[in-house]
Length: 104
Image 1 (spheres, helix red, strand yellow):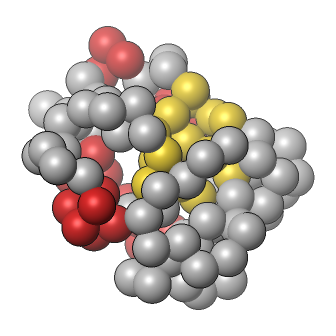
Image 2 (cartoon, helix red, strand yellow):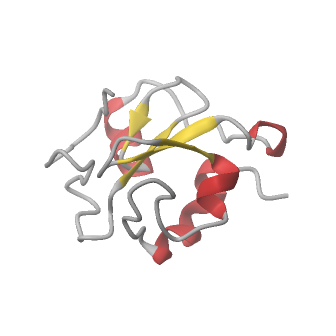
């Protein structure tokens, strides 16, 4: 799976977010491309971020950087780890949901 941006390792960490828990990439609704974070998208893409609407939360748009399993947005939002390999996700990512997902 191709992950764009300032990726620094094979588990999708980037120059902006690179703790042991920063192991997901997000497929952006605007371009269908995976990036580790919104900052990487802002730096590399030639367009603004478009949020995923609630009607699209069943789309596979989250990539576990550890095992490369794709999760739906619902799966990701309702768990703190990968259902396949059990890798723990960064709980702080919830603060960025409004950047990626329509929360209204």
